Image (cartoon, rainbow, N blue to C red; front, side, top):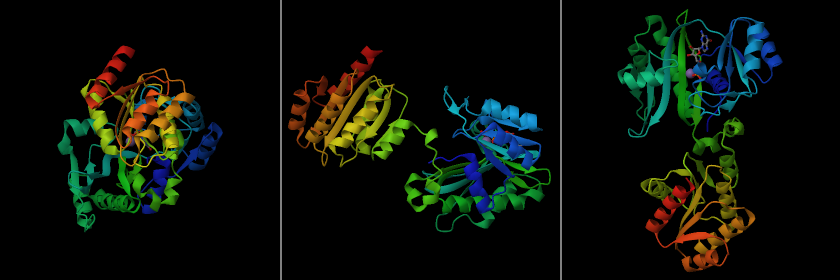
Length: 388
Ligand code: GDP
Ligand code: MN
């Protein structure tokens, strides 16, 4: 789960990661009020779940009341397009109004899980700021790393060594090491998958300050943090993913045009591979899981069809606990209630497969039933080719 910068900064404050005074605002008047209590100069920052705001015009420096008003009017209620939002952008519903810092240097600090090492890795760079992705690509040596040995956690000397290796003025090494340790504690306590401060500024007196804040929380750890669950902003999530989650279905949106209904994550992966193998691209996949009911299937099928990108649907089910006849009933029920104007290709195998195929065939609906995976794949390829 992603959270907003302003939410992440509140958590930073609890853990002792240094931040500047700030307030949130949802209207132009509130933004001006916030500014008057904070004092100038300040920055007005669009709160969306995407980075690249600086380059996209979502971060505005303001030196007086008029500057804040103009910035707030320009940002609030309008879509902000950055290189991370896609072309339609994200609607800005909230602003963070923050006292501006005098920035001497912009460092990068990030914690994530390196799955190949099976360890948390702390990354830091002296060339932080809006071009860090470019730096990581062109000059990977500029990003320094410390790996965390799980039984020991991040040891104080590692944080100190990392800060020291950055080559920043001696005065800043200790406070930066302290900020690294604070961010690590937060990362562990809150079950994060990513904690990133870019930039971590060094201000004129040499002390570090988190200018930006990005935290991703592990969905599987959220049951331990009911208070963090509240931070979820459904406006920032795909509405179909939200609906699917509410129905206990696993729905993932992608960029192609074949909608996929499968049971089980392994089969989902194999189905993605197969679709790509025949030169098509998945629009999404919907995993109904092992113990799906006919109602869940029906709901899932409708969610698939309401994705406007879908040009063909591929139902690929291996009936085990989920019986093929039950699946067929769910699909037929959903199909009867929805207008289907795209080809639906079905490949069923497993428990009660004959019964399932019979239900589909006798439904009077136009399903293309494939005898095996290979045939299913070529039907899918044909379907999206015809549809252009
Ligand atoms: P992002 O572009 O979405 O990552 O947004 P950031 O919060 O990282 O802001 C982008 C850039 O705006 C930073 O790298 C800074 O250069 C600049 N910026 C943000 N806040 C301040 C501030 O308080 N003072 C100054 N001088 N610059 C700031
Ligand atoms: Mn940033």
